Image 1: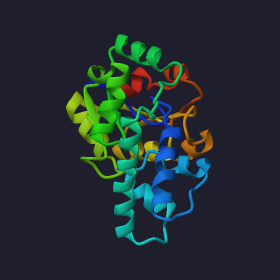
Image 2 (image 1 turned 45 degrees about the vertical axis):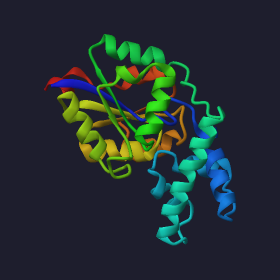
Image 3 (image 1 turned 135 degrees about the horizontal axis):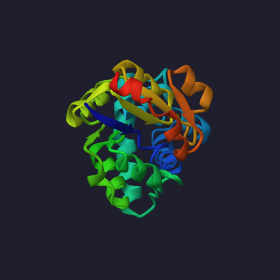
Length: 223
């Protein structure tokens, strides 16, 4: 079986928290809701949009969550059109991807972004062709459901025991656990190390280079 490293996008590959909070603020203002502080909005990054709105506004009608999700998309797309979206790679990510590829790992992405949003992000960095599988919220249930991991493994010819999920949220780690893969927490993102461990991370990396210290042993990969 092939070895597969599945990356979350927002908060793991790229630092997009400010963009997300700005679009969320515009959405909440448009619909008359109090804008949550940034440390609160960061808590739901990684969820699909409807689930994120439900987490931020649990007492609001579910139909309103759908409306808010569509409004958020419009605000984010407008910001991108106006050149106000910046999604820089975290320091050390290019080197990590290069090392994994050189060691024979296949790469994939599993994200709460849409297909369109992920394509824009990866194209900006010239990374689209580096990943053998791109899984988004457009075609899957929200994390921590394991659907995205299952599809990425199928695309890559990998098995749970030869797959790692690298992500910055408890949702990513829960997704990994549900799929039987190893979850490596990215503490440079939006959830803290204790949360990542509590959600099932086999290890937590403070920087991208430290991910290498938590890759599964050859005994786990090959029995």
